[in-house]
Length: 134
Image 1 (cartoon, rainbow, N blue to C red):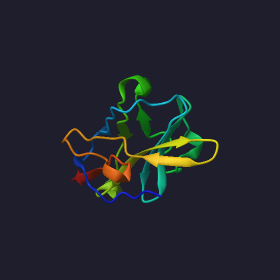
Image 2 (tube, rainbow, N blue to C red):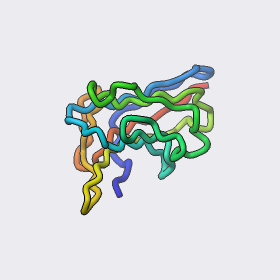
Image 3 (tube, rainbow, N blue to C red):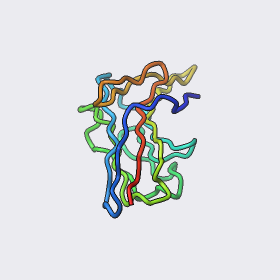
Image 4 (cartoon, rainbow, N blue to C red):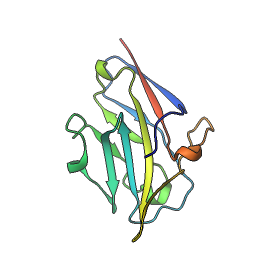
């Protein structure tokens, strides 16, 4: 399984903000059955698969607090909006990963590039870190 070791972008969050966007952009062609996962320390923050969000797969803590753009297959914009970030998330490190399912295997591959120019590299991730300021 891929890890979230290469920090690409830091998103600073001010106390009391309603939401924060964690950027992730890809130029890869995304198949309709693509699975996009945003994770934090192995916890499912947001899952998108087969053209829709999969809230039943989310960790309960994040359920109802995340969203991705509706036309992500067309735009390649895999950014995640996290609503009501909390002080407990002041050093939250989230990762975006694309997984394709094939009849004989499941593969994860690099697909994201952060706006700062760093790539997902071999890890297949588009990580962002949140720093919460009180």
